[in-house]
Length: 187
Image (cartoon, rainbow, N blue to C red; front, side):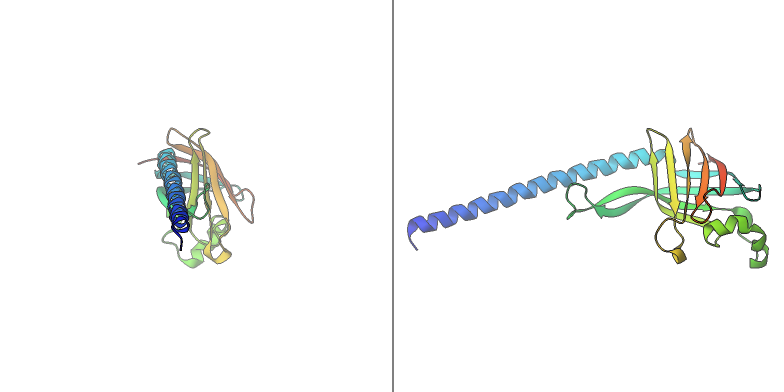
């Protein structure tokens, strides 16, 4: 190999290494930005975290039933919007909504509460892990799934969260409007 060919080869290697370094630093900037966005999103979710208690008015039966909603922040792995080859962690609300009056009932006694359990796929609680809160509009959306019915949302608790008071509507896949609720943060 001639010396000038060797010089060209070395220049190409240096150029490729520089390009890789530049791509690597650009990728690091994107990751840092994604991490900052995730921290900001987590801060935005914090007003919706806690334990909320109150009542749900079931539309079908006009029954009022006590409910307890507990929420926390979890991180879900998703592709980065800037670079889908990079997986980032995004904060979401997770938790459950339970009906204390139903906890210790026998199967036979639960039949009387089918207006509450049917919109939950026959269960006595709603579990969710993709909840979201918009701090600007105060909109809180807690879609829930039922394992036996796939991963698509089976229903949702949606409404407005202002000053620790979550007021909204409960909807389910088979019944568009299940009920309305007023839940107040107790911690």
